[in-house]
Length: 375
Image 1 (tube, one colour):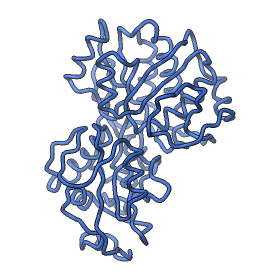
Image 2 (cartoon, rainbow, N blue to C red):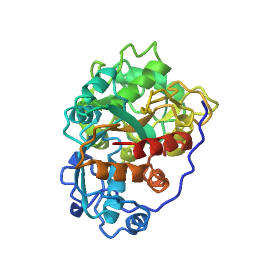
Image 3 (tube, one colour):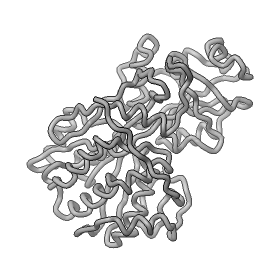
Image 4 (cartoon, rainbow, N blue to C red):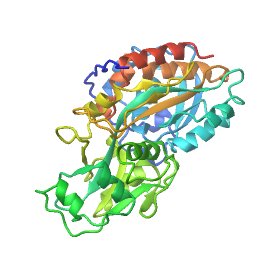
């Protein structure tokens, strides 16, 4: 079904990382900014946040893709709800789902929906209920590169697949030259980096390759990297750091990490013009998503092989995974209050400036209703 495109507010944000006063003591390596406890946007947001009975420490883990968004949200939320401390580790989707099914966290972030066996495992933690997927953050997966003398690069699904499968190994390869006739491509070895940890970003990136270039990507996909060759690093910040410091490097990462010397590839999808990795273009792709989850689960299906004009195909949606029933009594109020805020118009309105895409209107409305029913 066609879904409405979410109207985005232009909100000025301060630094994305959260200060120590907000008790994010285990943020891991994905923090990217400087803390600024006096950020005016956080104060402005605080007036619209409903804390209810939220208090205590809220532990969460999972997707590093949404880490920068979570940090921004936590800053605003804890400015309003001073009795709550939120610790979101951002260890990766695989680690987050494991922590959730083992009852170690109140909620988890994952760039892939729960698998049937993971839903089954969640039932031992969610007494009388099960884990459900709530889409909360969207955005483009940038294919970022660092090639001296090249500030713009067009690739298609075939060349991307061959690069990450070690079939194209030099930047002046004929296939890359054909897509970039005006670029001064050097005689330089390609250094392709992939995630070493189980990652929803890997899952979504390879789903794109499977859908858009099945003849050149013969792997089954999943959170664990399967192709041979290449080099690895942990987390979105890890692969981004490798691309920054390595001449000839290329990797896949969320757009918010593609900066400071990393240039995103423009993707030839077969549309009339190659498509840039932007929030707006990712939103066009996400707006055509379909809800395929059942019951209270709101997992989505994306068209990975889209050729729609201006639709960026390498996108992901990050889900917050929570129990529909059987949440722990001591963390339920804070969990509901925080999820309510990040799904709100104000919460979603912060995403564009942070390099993410808001969830379309029709879907986020269902998310809000589901959150109110958590027990």
